[in-house]
Each structure stands twice: as C-alpha cells, then as structure tokens.
Image (cartoon, rainbow, N blue to C red; front, side, top):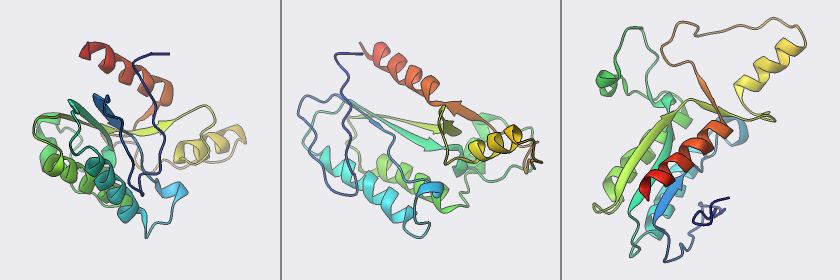
Length: 178
C-alpha cells in the first residue's frame, strides 16, 4: 500500500490516457505464448508498447521501466559467458522473445530522451496459482509423481522469479527514486 503508487490496468492494444501527474511507468504488460495466439503475439506486444509510448507524449515522465525477458538471448552453447558480453548473445528465437526484443528497440528509439529508461530482462515470472507457465506444468508432474524432462539443465539462464519478489523489486525502485 503505497499512496504514491497507482496501478493503471488497461488494454494497451488500444490507446490509453495517462494522468498528468504520473512520474514513472512500469511496463509489464504482454501476451505470453501460453495465453495468446502465437501468430498475433508479436503484433499485439509491439502495438501495446507503441501505444503506451504514444500515450506518454507531452507528459513529464521521468522514468520508464520495461520488463523484458531473458528469452531475447540465444540458446547458450558457451556456459561460461559473462554479462558484460551479453550483447553478443542477443538472438531471439520465439515469437515472444522477438516481441520483447522489438519492444526494447522501440522504447530506446521512441521514448523521450529526457526520460530515464531501464530494461529488465527477467526469467519466467511465477505465482502461487500460476497455471499457464512451463513451471506449472513441471510442478503438476512432480505432484503426480510423473516423469519430467529438463531440456536445458546446463544453460546459464534457467531461472524463475516469483511475482512477490518482482513486486519487492518494483517497490525498492520506487523508494530509491525519492
């Protein structure tokens, strides 16, 4: 409960109105492969980002935080890479990864240069009742004592983040802005 924090829930495929007193935007909205038409995923996610950026025009937004995905990286063959070399490994394969990567580029190109931009490349976000993610499917198989296959056990990025931890990160950022 932060009195300075307002959640604006909107369908970004349509243009929205951002109140004049908004200082920071946290863009977490996206269709995911599990809950959308795979053929429309890229267009929906990039259109949403374009619409959000367009709605920021003539607003005094000081900070823009975009929650992207580690899916923008290629499948690592070299397990010993360092994050300072990350740009060499950008190679999104899936439509979801491509939509995130294109959105990153749109943000860097279209957002007002006076606005501070920070892009987070997150692993899969899960919650107690997540049922659309691959993690949920694995959890369900474990509960039923069924065989699970881990396709990429040795990859550098093979993680998840819980929604509660993500919320803590967002509030940490908000506190640091004061």
